[in-house]
Length: 497
Image (cartoon, rainbow, N blue to C red; front, side, top):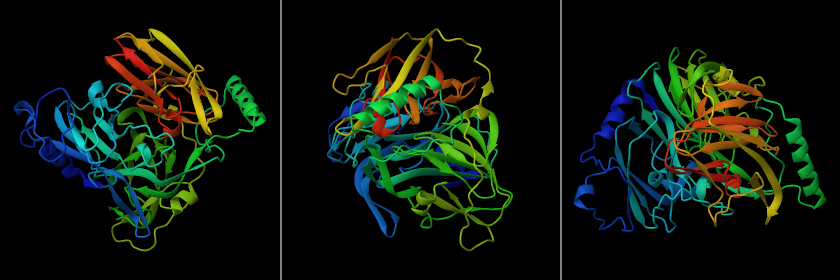
């Protein structure tokens, strides 16, 4: 998805000026099918956008054709451009036989729009539709994806192709680039295994001794019981923008250009890396939010559901592979080609020097000036292979129950809260809070402020603090964005009143 700078505002404006824009502020449910559907007069205007959820085939390469669920018959789903603060209407049709949820990740929207059944969002009925009306905010790079719970069914949830990018145009646009490129990283053909844990030495910070001791004690007990590892998910096909390396159109650039890359990790479970030989990335935004300190890095490390926006100076002409550091994943498709004007030939790859991803590089040193009204402390633990071979994840000893929709923690509207997460497992957890952005205030053993995110990676045996203001009434879901973690307990709800 490559867009020249001069076309950006035209594309956003044209989409938002569709005839008959509805102005309602609530979502309308309907179990009617697409054919013969009629709305009351006050809601019968034409929607600004239409999304259709349906099953079909996508061609990652001529020898890799995948059957999956997508938006509008394509992967990734269509890039949607909103304008911050301008109300929109979106019709979502579900052409499958399974009720669906569409989550507007990173946006501050009402519960009935957010797309989480745990919060109380109505389902998009099978063979039916919902009309959604909301005001997009905040500005920046967001996305939309399914939020159904697949558990052990790898044909559902985020294992499918139900992922699409959203860009919310700010009221005033900086425009400091020549070309804008959106990249969605995604794996396909998932399968369960009981292998080891994902490497995590790329993430800054040292283990907390007490957390490591607790986690290793739990692991030793699991080994004694004959259950050292629960199921993990692996993949055999990898893609950027729905094409395997060597099978998509190259990103065409000119020497001297400044290209703004918006990169989304659309994986269900994987942490991804991205490098472009001979070039560096100036990170300007994380999860769509401008960073308080821009920093130049040789490699992007992107947790599940994280987004990175980075400027690249095109000053190293040639034909290059923009790809993952994992040789196996890159050779199986996780890459794309960057081709300079006037150059041809086989794309080249070289592995960059070892690099540690450190969120502190993008934040201000020291604690925030505003102190929280209350702190909530959570200890994360893992019960290996405790549910028919799947790990159970607990917070303060409790796994989230899909049957009772608990635990629910009460917060008071307008107050500032600090969540302290202490990870007594060796896994990385990408933590996500719905309907809010949060300020990361302590990470890798250091107090920081000014790092505004909606997903952040918590390292194995590490701790992390994040602050948020409870300003959204109703229920908001907090969870690990690793699908197999959230499905097996790593969630809780906040009730704001």
